[in-house]
Length: 315
Image (cartoon, rainbow, N blue to C red; front, top):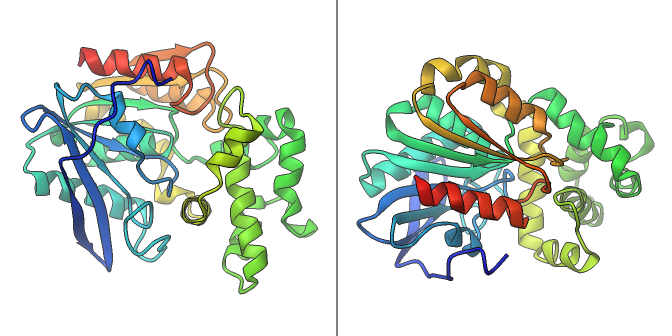
């Protein structure tokens, strides 16, 4: 993948933005100070930003803004659930735009970042120049069932799914999101530690066409990442993402039908299956749906990385 990406760069500005409710967001800016502003919305919820994400963008063309959403990455309080909902995150993005003084900006993101990108564009269409989204996700009940329940992922990865369920008592295995929520809120520290790791392990195992044991171990070796990723995802998914995905789809044409929208979707994405990308594309007839025939979920798969960079270069 490294030969596809732009060379590594470091941020020339970084800091924290106080967004109220006791939350402070870590942000960073890199690339051309006079370039077209673009913000990257990370996945999860709770995954946090990552230095490799800067390398998706031509640093001579873009002013690249990365930030960690509430409770994620370097933002504080770490893994904080209070005052942490989708409406809060939408307003945080808008505060960040105002902080930088951009009139409009491009939006890029994937997985949960695609949810947030569409929700922000719906709320603030006049502030969006374009959307480049991958792994399209709207947190609808069937999408959550496909990933965490007895859907395609559980059948294709039956061995991994059995391990995922093994952290739960038998009476909670039919509703694993609820079962994990019970554990995450318990005082049994050892059980919580096991559960946060198993939650993240399950998602990472099904996120690409090929996930080696070495790569999986690398993905879950950071306890801070695992804690924020698992607890924040569970918090959001217990609450349906604090969003009505069907209503959002129904209103997209009216709100952002005139925008440039690119949807990049791996055919074999088991985290965010293809159906949602198809539904969003149909709601936005002028959007461009890029169907990747040899990709799963993660943007780190070569076909996905290559297509994203091609699109971004052409904006």
